[in-house]
Image 1 (cartoon, one colour):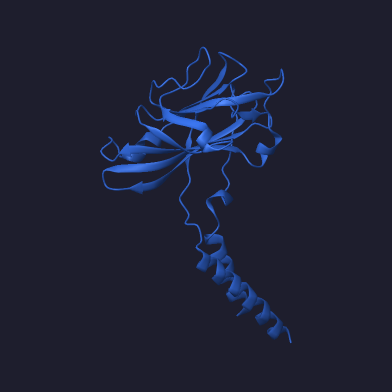
Image 2: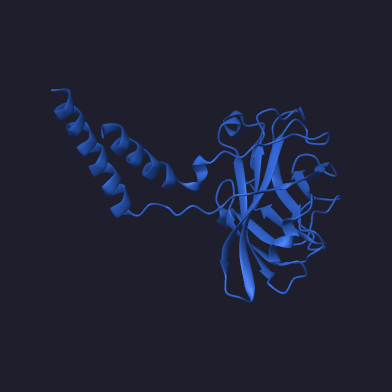
Length: 220
């Protein structure tokens, strides 16, 4: 009986783990400057006309090998399988409010920021709010950029089809004009897991306390 109760409580706690507890594998590429990246998407809502997706870029810059002192990522972009969309920043290093999200890719010349052209989503940092690279802390806690992206349900192949093929990832460093990461990655899915409400957390806590007293009682 003790083992059955313990397993039930453990299963409930595991189900209620926040999304961040689920690991995403980051990989490198020939043009990644020693950084590791991953791109993910998850469905946030669908009203029957438009689907809203959370689209994320994760970056581990702990192995960045650009050299010549620290650099700062001041713009990033992800390709979306030929579909042009608008995007709003939901999360970003140093705060989403300090980054501007939009449709379109990165300029390969000049300041190298978002240029508003092409089937991409882009994010550009306000001056002084770029993401430091290398940053050893990102080995365990990667940088994350997340956009809210709206895709019409009438899109050929369905709204999620924009994530079906490999996507170009572009990253620009403010200190290195005309140089940026540009390579293809595959989208991973991140199923949305509901955050436990206070009542759920309280039930888990009560279950653990009951389990403790039950074990003491059985051991006597």
